[in-house]
Length: 204
Image (cartoon, rainbow, N blue to C red; front, side, top):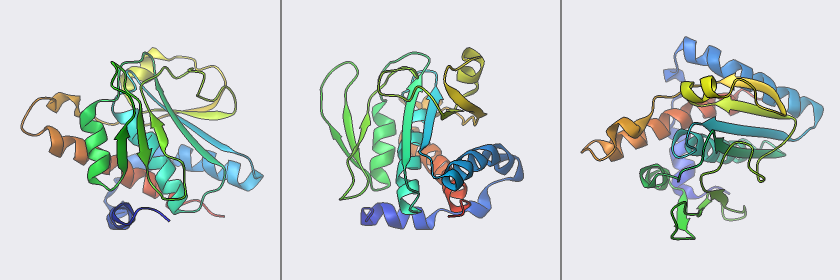
């Protein structure tokens, strides 16, 4: 069972607010997941951004939780960057605000976080890494580009079965401003809403 606050947050997300142009961007992801469900195969999603610090982590964590919410079996969500930096604290706080349990495991330049979403499920390991890191999939995965820069920087991603551009605006523009928390939460909830649309359209 998902944590109660998180479950309430997911139920409140309004997918009817998603524009037709965004729905069209999301359709290839729906098609990929549906094809794997139909074939009874593992679903491996690798969300990729430049620094693996904000949007790619938000996408990975929400996708894993929403897949669990919709009872999608054999779903494995990952994230990576064209370079590694660190999971930005404001992104972790935006997830916490929606009901995830975020625990810092290390105090290093690139800290490791445990991000929990359900009592009976292992937490997601949150740390910045490149998209081809040893913990990320090597074959039969969807490469989902969450920023246009990563899309441009990665003309070829080895092992990816499909490549899906799905750019989101970067909340980094509001770092160290009075709007930082609000804008990170806004982007987190946009990503959550769009991924809810994706998983709610999967037929089992």
